[in-house]
Length: 123
Image 1 (cartoon, rainbow, N blue to C red):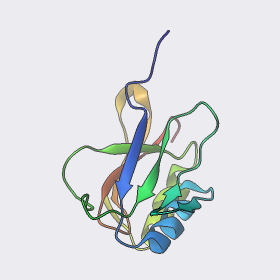
Image 2 (cartoon, rainbow, N blue to C red):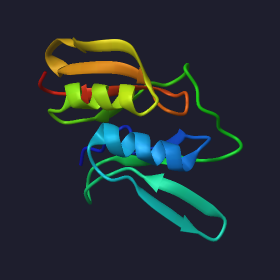
Image 3 (cartoon, rainbow, N blue to C red):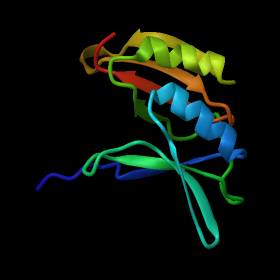
């Protein structure tokens, strides 16, 4: 049975509420706030079997412009997602561009200072 190499990602944030607003707008879906004794995070949208992650306010991991580049799927709404980046406190580092037969991406900085890629199979 084939497994995905990437199974989860924690995206570090300094302001969870601001990050939830940013990612909800960029992804075009609600990021759910989850909490329990001693923890709180923003759960990125996903269905039962797809890979996802969370927005994680933690002291031992800080937002970064360097390091691994996390790709988030925005389906066929890449232009709207890039516009939401600009509207919600992010910055575009690389405008939408084709990445060969793998679709299109834009590289952006989120509201917390993380470099991420937004991906869509179609322009």
